[in-house]
Length: 318
Image (cartoon, rainbow, N blue to C red; front, side, top):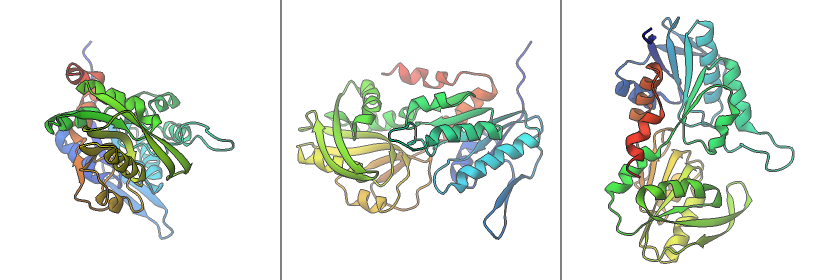
């Protein structure tokens, strides 16, 4: 019996409209019409302006701050479920609260697990996301999770730079696995910046494990929040004799004075994706789009194809 392909409908949350528009263009289908009604006290209610009955619905919304973005996505899922959508996929390019993935001190919440529970309880059948802060967060879900790898976007760009003495670096010990994964694509060495924190977003000290002398360093991270870690790591790397240093970060959270910090840093450039829209400007920030990758993943899901197939050709180039 041949596979049945249901009608696909794409909808954008208010926090990811620009990216959703790019995804819809790459997919070849217009975004569905949806209205977000707001009450005077700040309460809001999403409403689909067209039928989603029997459709495979893809709801595109990153859950960066404010938490309204997360709650809007939950309401969008619930509304689609109550409108008899056949299959609901929450496309969450940036999965917020992912840094709360374990109980690292007494009496704290594991926020990432709670968000997984909320998305499932709201009625999502599937989650599509990119570069989770910790890959094991996929195990917090009891529904399928498609975890897209932004390396397939960053590696070709890094190759295009033709850096003569490329070395990959991690800005902290926790990111060493991610850095080693990138290094395999280039057969490059890895150095690690070992940092000690006083508290969140405040670094006490940092040292380098490895030799950076005369090297063109590319720092790899998944999130750039205040840019303090990247800026300090870049300065330390250049002080230790590197020829150049740039950074690759999937999710440009860029809070507080991050744009100013990046602009005043020794970084040659900060390469990010569009999982979160930029709120400011810096001549050093370059944005690479994730739209084509998400569009191809949506196609494969609707046609019952493999997500890993999206990366096979890329893997052969390791």
